[in-house]
Length: 231
Ligand SMILES: [Zn+2]
Image 1 (cartoon, protein in one colour):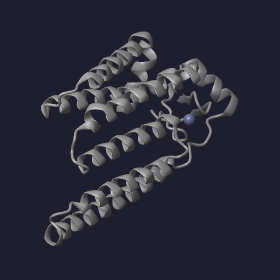
Image 2: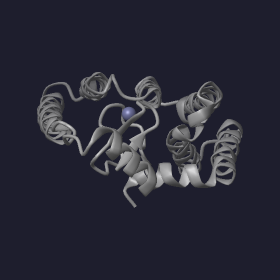
Image 3: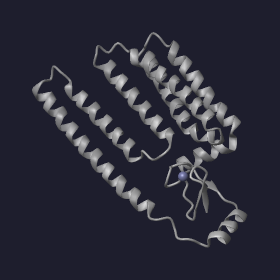
Image 4: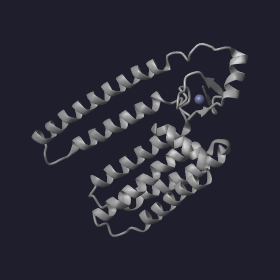
């Protein structure tokens, strides 16, 4: 039996993630479980949330597949009709954005962290694509995307302050930002970019911030990450 700290409900099945809000659940000890049984009896299992999830996942995969096929066809058309303009890259970007937008709406009732994550991924991709197809000057990887990541660090800090009782639920977002910042600086070095000031600041701030939260909230953070990744 587990409990969702966000929805304040108990679940008979040991879900790692709350089926209602996608928040990481807490395990209840024997005493608490007994108290709930005494009060509510054994109760009915949670209504088929897993089945609903499966159907949803199937449709999302189908849509993703059709987007990929459409884009592949467009790339071929592009290649054989107007090879001088890479317009298929723009349609590809639109497909990616459309799919992310769809994911966003499907899970619009889930946590705020997911929304922030989606917005940031979208912004990074759009910035990179614009740079790539407007002269490829490299400003996206050297300035704009590190800027987005630093901005994201700020948002995570704001969210943690705002939601102090569950501050550790934003560590996954922080981990994502950390991975991005390391990825960006690796790309910058690999492509011999000249200006690494902002990427370096970005890596230092994000990585220190992430390890700082692990040190401070050892148990809570460990549980959050463990259950998110099913390890
Ligand atoms: Zn919940």
